[in-house]
Image 1 (cartoon, rainbow, N blue to C red):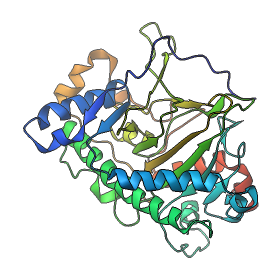
Image 2: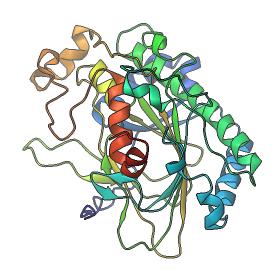
Image 3: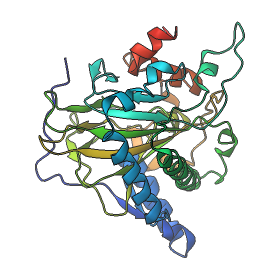
Image 4: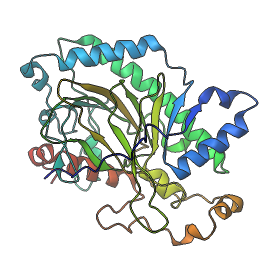
Length: 352
């Protein structure tokens, strides 16, 4: 069964902080770092503008995305992800699952262009995630645009991650060692068709990497769950209304572990658009090397004191949620996520 979706809070339009990254390069940098830290801590979601991505590249990406999903079904299925042991390629509506229910979206899963790693008995399971992408032969421009935007999304995400590290009292390069040429980046090119029987475009979930960055059209549908209320009631859902020229950014589970829960990965979902409306987006996920083991950082005392008794870093337990225990070893999280989301691919290639 799909999740029963409660409506977003009345009049909740965006509510997400909007941060201009150009302020990182001027006298307003300290204020921007403080705003960034508070947005990441209190909401876990924010919008960045002033990121420097060429609008012409975004237009080329948008055009390629719409062209691909307008192809005949047979041409889209020619690169279906069931043909890839690395979970790369196209998946049809209803074949990816979130929280055990089918998502009403079709998409292409893309990663860095790499050759498969040699596999040996006893190797970690995550070595099987490395491999080539699958591209439509009839749209060569799609590969060019997607990989070019992926490189820009990586640049922007790394800039945000360095700024976050500095805002938490660390050196800006604190996380850099995990983000070399073998980082496990991941990108989704997504189409949400309108008028589906289920409202679950994507079910409620958290992202398991460090950061996620979303380029979306003007349709909307992304919703963010605010923190629980003081009496323990679940937080309200708010609409993350698209901001012209802005990318939505959210905190992933690896940053939650790294900060011992000072920053927390936030639940979010996407509701299906109404009949006659299509939604398109491209989501980028900043993951470290698959062999990364996240080491909790030591926060300055003044940051810990800001939260008072509500926060005790020594009491943080990443396995507290039995339905979603977190692992400091990133590769374990990545394998778990892929197998859970694409059981058909996992069965075909012996992942489960």
